[in-house]
Length: 187
Image (cartoon, rainbow, N blue to C red; front, side, top):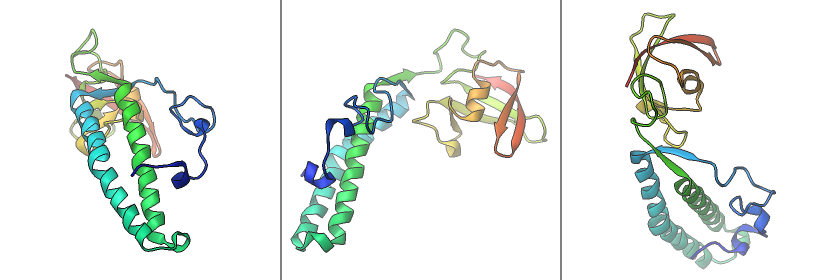
């Protein structure tokens, strides 16, 4: 069972962000999505799971909820409709990201190993502390995971170190103030 206009209320082409309409459009359709090969594979796996597994699960939940009767006061039906909307929205988002994906690697750029680029592994040290260097991988926003030391090229630290080389000191504006970092290694 797939979404119909009845499931989401009245829809028009302008409500679909991929249609190019102005109402509800929150992104440019041909906006590049920077991902590593590993990240691209994860996006495709998640999309496949949503299309083959989650859609079926949601359809089953909707079918069960409808069987309870009176849809106007059926919270199970409302929850299933909301989950269906989330799944379909995520499918659209993933399809857009995959369509516009640009695979990055550590070998991109002319100064690999010298200049910080997306795909670089960078060691930085807070110049105001005695802590050892932290190692980060610079990735596109889609793959960012600070707990796994993967920071986005759009994050404050990522933006600040892009284009710099080993030995450079950069200033990063954070909610707690400006922090200076020294780039100790670029790989």
